[in-house]
Each structure stands twice: as structure tokens, then as C-alpha cells.
Image 1 (cartoon, rainbow, N blue to C red):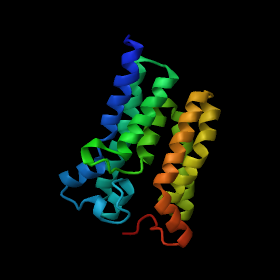
Image 2: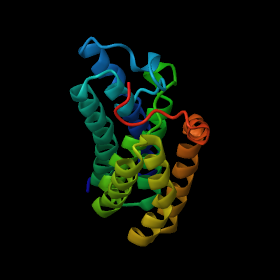
Image 3: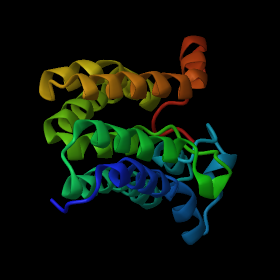
Image 4: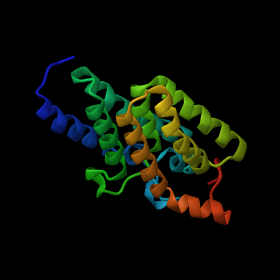
Length: 202
């Protein structure tokens, strides 16, 4: 680990994580590939699922990988400086909030599932695996990406407590889960009304 005054760590690492999280890969990939802006179709969410609705699996894949990677790298880089759970938890929340409220795109971003998963991957690969398996099972059976994400999110605090066993991470997981549910409120309404778009539908 590289030594740095704690006061600077508390500011610079979460700030850097927020700025990294603000890079919306759906928008970047759409512009590079000359595709329609994902904010103008489907759910309007700049994320991998909406990119898939554009009919480009490659664009969706690059978006997913980019959003995952920024969460993973933010936590991994933080780990080079400190293993303090409070700072690591702050970085997870900062990169997540950067994706939700990106400074580069008018503070209007995605829902943050992939970025949160990427950050969790750096904290604990087993935590990320538990969430991915939950998503895959629900999505495979019911064909709703949003429902799969919501169920994985609801279970994430249990996974965090089981695997990380630190109250700081549990609080982080609960806060993140509540925000994710709030960001998915339209999806929840659509699911209840039976109008939510299934995986693979344009």
C-alpha cells in the first residue's frame, strides 16, 4: 500500500471514484458506434440492457464491461492506498453515485447495477458471484432484467454480512440497495402493471 495522509484519502479517493463513475459507457459507446442515444429509446436508461434494445449485442457488451470495470478499478486503486473499510465503502458509494448522477452528462445517468456489481467484485469476488448467480437465475426464468436486478439487490445486504462481516459494509450495502430500489421505481410500477419490457424485446 502507498502511504498517504488519511485526511487526503477521505477526500481524493471518493472524489476520484465519483469522477470515474461519471463516465457513462452507454453514451460513449453509442457515440463511437454511431448508434441512437440510449436515453431516447426504451426505458431511457443509459445501460447495457437498453443498448441491447438498439439491436447491438457488441455495444451492450462493451457498455456492461465498461460500467463494471469502472466500479472494480475504483475499489482496486483505493486498495493500493488503504484497507480502511470506511474509505472503501465511501469509494463504492461514490463510484455508484457518479454513474447515477454523472457530472459529464447533466447529472442524469443510469441505474448503477453493473457499476455496483463491479465495485462489489473488487471487495469480494464471492459477493459478486452470489449476485450474478441470483440475477442469472431470475432473469433466465422470468426474462426480466429489472426484476432480476431488484431481487439480487434485495439479497445483497445478506450476502455482504455473510461474506464481509463488517457493519460498515453492511450499512453501505443497505444504502446502495435503497437507492437502487428508488432508481428502479418506474420498473417496479411497470412490473406490477405487466408492462415491463422483457429481455430481448426491442
